[in-house]
Length: 609
Image 1 (cartoon, rainbow, N blue to C red):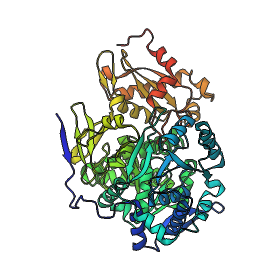
Image 2: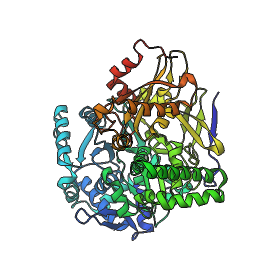
Image 3: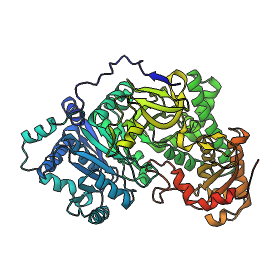
Image 4: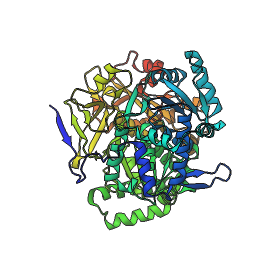
């Protein structure tokens, strides 16, 4: 049985307005507010954030577009960008799509094999990288493919200036003709999914896909896109579809945009810029909370932090349930804010209000904590195949534990197994050069089979329960969703990551990664000499503390679903070692393969009951 839902609540007509290409959206903003601030650029010398108006950005975009035309590129040609999130990345990307080129992002963390696949599959005709070193890497891959004549430029060596110089002979008439030739159904980009396999799939997204979704978010979240006084800080990789969508949406709407190329400078950048909104993945919020916990390692400070954390969560839950917390709770929360919570909020800058979270599931308790410190935290859901968002919580009206309601005109239905199927104007055109894979994902009626599991919650809010491929079926036939257990384990101060196992095994187990930043405090609190990570793995008291975390997680599930064994891993999961995606999601299969010996040790000859 299929249960289908369609968002019909909005009074806005779901028909896309006539402007349905990205270039037209940017041109429309230029006509509306030419003198408004479009972006902030950080001065590399003084660190000051310098404003650039819509007119100034538009002039730079046109210069790069002319340069690309002057170099001989035409509508339908594909160029690739490999680099960190930056103003230069954005300028090249927008300039390219505005004249009908297909802009293809490459993650900085992609392997040489993945880069070679993208270069050949998308028939890339030019590559621009961030650094000279990245350019050398790409040239090596092109040589291996026998296509070394493909031009490779890099921002570090003035790529944009050199490209712009090639456009000196391109007239206004030629530039306008190139822009006017672009249609909504034309391909804007091919985004290769990071996934967990070595060969990524290219998702084809059109101008119409982006334009429709931008209008949808303008209608339902004007606080995010239509406030001319707002500033969005973007630090997630623009190779990821969600960051890319937000970049397009902000530039086409009303707020200003600022880029942060290095997540290590996240706090200092936010405090110097003072943005009104940022976009994060849950892992970033987890790290900020853990860092705050580590500032209160023991004794009175630890008890105080725990009390303030409790008040923050309780206050957020009361806001959601009753709209106005009782007086006693408001007083406790005000004290907690004065003592601890305001200090955590200040890390986001003095102007922060809205935090958009996506890319991976957000633990409800974590969401309540950050809303309780004074942030309007909204979570959405989508995937590369949906041009980013398909559902989103409305600002000021988020229900934690849900991913919000459907975008205007978007349909959802759930199979008997709970798989989420989506249909709407934001759905991809298909997988590039993969007709069989496209047929598997998109059925004849236009429904996208997401592979995610979920159901419809209160007031039309969608609830995600996991990935279909991640559901564990034990040897006894018990279906176990790993995400609730993993979320609960990661909420423990000592645990950085957790992967729950047990498919076709007699019981459930877990692989645990320690939070190395919290370890020194833990050893100090237990009057033990601090040792390195290798020696820490053998410490009995540490294992006992982790067992308490496992016991707490097990209270969420039945006996048959509970974790019976766990092992501590010697290192963390990172993009560099191939165990995290660029959006910081764990590559479950890669982790299991990497630590197969430990997995075998857990189950060899054991039958836990």
